Length: 161
Image (cartoon, rainbow, N blue to C red; front, side, top):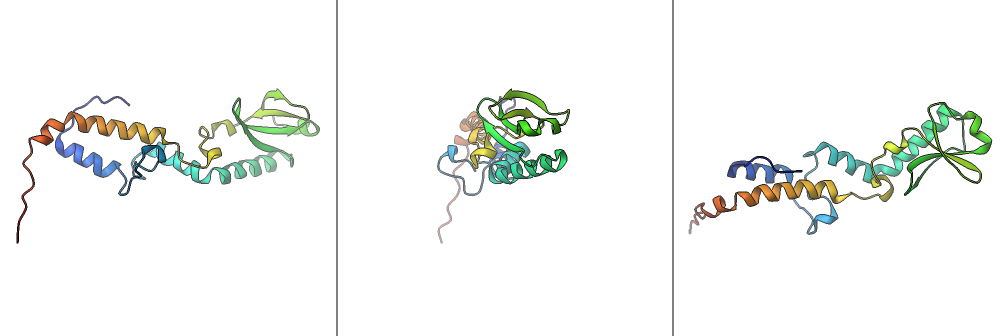
């Protein structure tokens, strides 16, 4: 995410307050640095990482209902990502919108929407730090551009009582 505008001090402060979680983790790689609600795509990825198994089960149930193939399974591998596995005995029930990808020993691999599940977040069951890391890096870069201006600000006054 390239930084194309220069922010004022107030812009930087607002961005930090709006974007960074109240209690961010010590390591960005742990995820959770960016506040929920700040970035819709990151929120969607978080939701998938937390509820991915449930989404997969819902897709599997929906496709079983739609096709009448009770042995249909949603699977994952590193070559195809998410796919539908249909046993040879049920191939005649596969709808026309299922795209055949590979033949296995006793089944076939088909695609039909399940590959749209985001990356591997649903499978891993944890947040992918990539998008949050990019957002954090952008804010850090914009803040760094203003460091000289911050250095010239007067120190906060300390009232002794």
